[in-house]
Length: 361
Image (tube, one colour):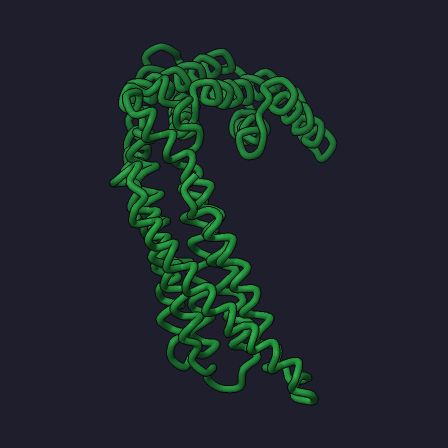
């Protein structure tokens, strides 16, 4: 697994969590008589992280889920013996509250039952005397975590732009690398590296970009840092799913090339027309990413798309000839290498799908 440089927002969230944890611990120790009010900083950390990139409504739901999990665990205490049956019932009830009452889904819905189990593991034996104090600690931690997030909100604008720019550059570079690679003899070692890189862009960078953009305009209503940039956030919300789909197409192209190389003994012969198409696609993807700096100016993108169309027609002609050779090859058509044209046809299909998301809406 490759390491990716943390973003400013990720660093900022880590620092905010540390600040909220320290403040909530001090306040909880002063307000309650609990010797070590660790539930306060624990809840503050979860609250800061849960509210970092979400709208106010979702942030409140997640914070309520955490507080509810802690309070339920404190009420139960060691009154309920823990075994397979009771744990199953507790998780079912807690998850039901998350899904059916708080209307959470995915990872946020799991926060309540996970919090419940973790707190039970800590306070279920011999600590009932601090039950009320620990409940107050939890509320203090959630309140301070929420206040810190509101007072020091993460800028979705900066994070979203950075994530989208990084994704577009990486996708364009992936296509350019493949385009340059297939213009000379290429091997399965090369295509394996291309596929691994494209998959990382698809599974990590694309997912991070989509998460960073989120529902930016809704979240901006509660974020004074982003409130004046609704038009930019709207642009990012349009661009994120398009780049995500493009990342899928790039990874599929890399996979098709890898399958083709695996069927070829030794190095594969150069395919300059296919290389020219991939290079043109790279330029178009880069032009799309450049619109983050020049919104509304799509002249470079239109020029790049015209080049893609020319290179696509050339590659289609080459794929057609390969198909005809495979059909006319008689016995040679049984050779797996004779079916290469199928792989190139698949690449053309993915290229067309990428162009669909590149065309200005």
